[in-house]
Length: 64
Image (cartoon, rainbow, N blue to C red; front, side, top):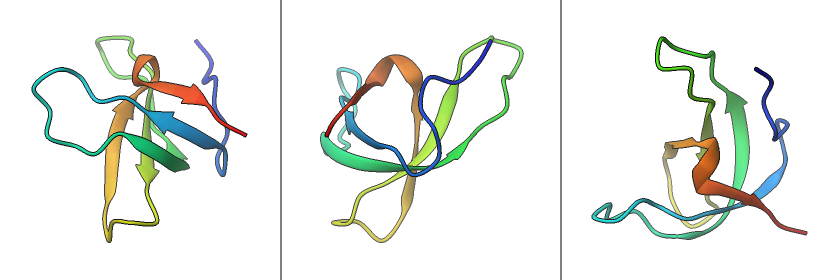
């Protein structure tokens, strides 16, 4: 399995239903290793927040 997004890529984050996270534009900070559940995850950061989030690949899409 390979990650679809590279470090520094601009992405649009769409949180899952029930998650209070803000959807919108983020930047990929780090690709996380594949765990036992075989899901690809990333650490992402928004300029509007002082912290990073963890997002799964299916929650992200490319932006320009």
